[in-house]
Image 1 (cartoon, rainbow, N blue to C red):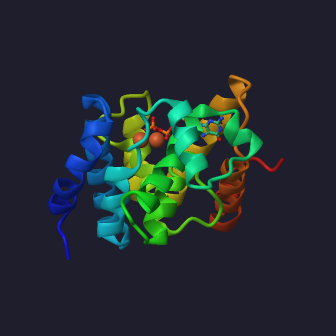
Image 2: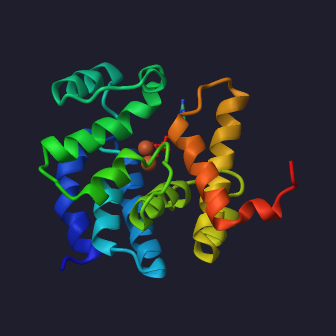
Length: 201
Ligand code: DGI
Ligand code: FE
Ligand code: FE
């Protein structure tokens, strides 16, 4: 068993050279938030904190460099992914964990891989890392306090709200929405019954 502090201390020298000061602090904040959410919801705290500290390790790496790494590792992108450089960092980070850090745990790898798009039927750890990225201490968007409160009241309600925001924001900018994002939204709505609160369309 490692404590949250020990996990953050272990991975700090690994992520630090890859990241700006701001992005480094964000990563630490997401790790701490993921640990808190994991405790609240009875998820594996070590996996949540590990995925949290590592989730954005490739965020400050130029997209072309990320593409080269992904090619080396045999990672094939879909058309939507190839045309959205902002999506590269989650996919290339999962590759970095697997092939450079030799992390084998599929739940940690998936939590990193799907932290931006989400996907249908996420595990509790994946769900928690996705949400921790939305509500970490450095987030300042309007409504963040409401999201933080919701995250500790109803995990899936908060995830649906986050996904709805992301989908609406992408649509408003005429940016392609990743199929995994739509699938996550639909699955959680249908499974957790939030659709009953909405208008019947
Ligand atoms: O890396 P962070 O800034 O902490 O957060 P993130 O990994 O959630 O990245 C957010 C960015 O990813 C934001 O600019 C919107 C973009 N994004 C999220 N979901 C999708 C997406 N872009 C496309 N094209 N499609 C998606 O489904
Ligand atoms: Fe990210
Ligand atoms: Fe992030």
